[in-house]
Length: 149
Length: 315
Image 1: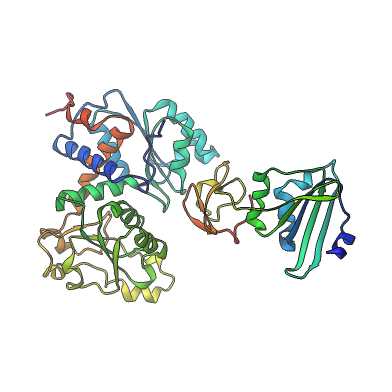
Image 2: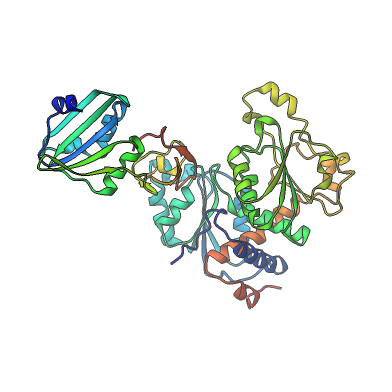
């Protein structure tokens, strides 16, 4: 852990998203619109060594605190991330992400004949256990295999 | 306000199904009326389906409604790139109810969310075709006197057959026992077997199709085994003649057995079966008119009581 902190600088205030599977890092960045964040400082550690995961990634974003709904979106691509809310260089709160009951405009339906892949509409999925059921075509899909919108 | 559209069979309660059966029964007794005089029914067929369209349009005309629509999307603006949304928004300004057939799954649900004009799903891809199920249920009720505790044998393509999947869902309220008879390659998908288990529906699977197997049937629901569904054409050649119903296979049939088929039939029911008292598929198609009369009235907010006390009946 100390090595990591050396590799990715500490932030005074903000959010740390840790234990991101490295192959999902860029999806996490897109989901939270971190790539559109032009004012705040962002540190990204990619392919860091991790005892439990082999390789992991970490994002530290200064002066940003996300809503629960925003963070829960991460559960689709990285269900085991840990979130730390930092204030004055101290961890004030730790959180896990939870899969929400419904996902709107987060994942794409893998049924090419579904209306939501053919009209300009938001996708909607009802979450049942580890599968998402498309609100429109009712096809169930494995959440570990889905693509993001 | 609850959306009055009919897009799926999955959410209809037992009470609602029986209510629609009652209404269809009234239309069977007195099919010609002016109860929809002055109303406009739009039939939007984004893919051709002559049988379903004629059935809906006949139902609308028999109740005095006017019908607008198209039967071939090639002549509409959708070929110019118009979205389904724009088509629906336009047509909903013209008509009182939209009957829609579309090749995309979920299209009817989407359409029903765009407009307050009720939408009737006349088939959306491989997904749902609720009016077919309502007419199937009506035919079962008409021939058996009840929907409860029946032995229903589904034969043929149980993998892709949307009508058999919807029938299972609709029958969940009525404690049926299903027998699934199909080649392995077209067997009932696991998700529907799981659905049966979750809803306490008994089912038995068979690969053989012979007089003994079907001797316990109240309803024999035949579907077509299509060549294009097979990845292995040798397998198709092997099974294509196994799932054909012939007259001699009915020697042990129960008296109350009735044979249904969503039509069109190709060769899966031999012509000589037509002359047996068990054949009921043409009556079933006729029931489509009464079922669709009921569906159109129901989504328009016309109640069973109003249908029964209708003063516009043409004798």
